[in-house]
Each structure stands twice: as structure tokens, then as C-alpha cells.
Image (tube, rainbow, N blue to C red; front, side, top):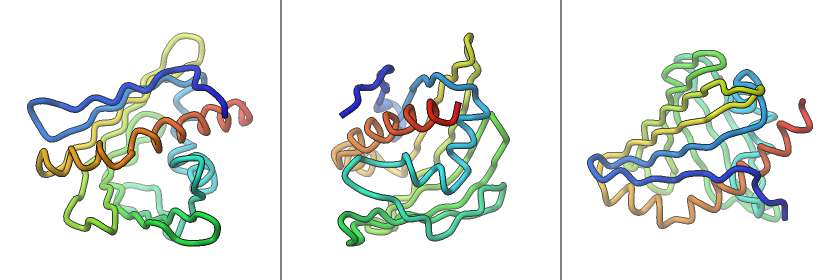
Length: 162
């Protein structure tokens, strides 16, 4: 298994029911953005190594919607869906995220991309949910494994696309 060049900060906010992610990538914002809005690219990196992602709906524009399923060995494990509230090329995506197994646990997610020296990008994700119990359940779900393994896959995809 490949090691990550950069650590992912996963921070639980003490004041509001939110999770903050911060991660750097060796690619410019336009390339990181494309990996988040192109369904073929997104399916290649999102989630842990043990699952494959199957996109079922994808309209990455302001007002669009998305949905995907995670499969393991041809069997569907989980499905997710949401809406794209704002898609600002190369810098910001505001969307909702719902795990279909917990339909009341909708998260509002704000992803921002910051250009760094040397053609690198700092990604920041803020995920806000309705209460601390939902936030804590997300953190306990193994979310960190999916995030970290997904970002390692994204590193490899970005390197290949460069």
C-alpha cells in the first residue's frame, strides 16, 4: 500500500457540529477541482481501497445533483447522494452529502481550493451536520480510513494526469 506524502488533518469542531479536513496535493487547483467534478475521475479515487465506486447520477454544476454507490466484490455496500449548491471552477464546491442509510443525517459541505507555491493546492473541507451525535457517528464510522485512503488514490491519479 502506498504511503501518503501529506497528512490529512481531520478536526472535530468543539463549538459547532462540524468536521474540518485540510490536505495538500502536488497539483494545481484546476487539476484537483477536475478530480472532484469529473465523474470518471471521482469514481477512481473516492473512498477506501476495499471498495469500488459506481456513479449513478452526476451533474456537477450549480443546482445539479449527484449519487454514487460503493461496491465490494460486485455487491452494493452503501449508497450516497446530494446536490451541488455552488460549483465555482477551480476554487469552491458547496454541496450536500447524504448516506442513504441515515437519510436524516444530511451534511452541508464546503470545499475550497487554495493555490500554493510550486503548483500545489491546499484543499479545505468543512462538513456541517445537524448535531454533535451525528458528527460523532460520522467520525466513528471509519470515515478517516475512507478519507485517507481516498486521498492517497487521488495523489496517484493527479500524478498520472500531470
